[in-house]
Amino acid sequence: MTNVEAIINLINSDPIIINSNYAKYNKVNYEPNFKENILLTYQTHRITSQNLDLSFENNIATIYNKIIYDNNDSKN
Image: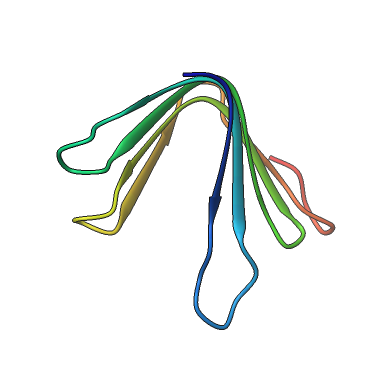
């Protein structure tokens, strides 16, 4: 997929929004892999990177390659 926007809706919380240039979606285990110009936003938090893999089965997000995190208080 190209020019992807994914929204993860959490119970009793704001959504997590993921934008990226490309993504692969595994129809068997429902796990997406995003790549190139990723922007993940959640409330005041913003993470940019080149790769993001989600595992809903294991409740894990793996973010790697050129990671930048910022919010209202810090930027790293």
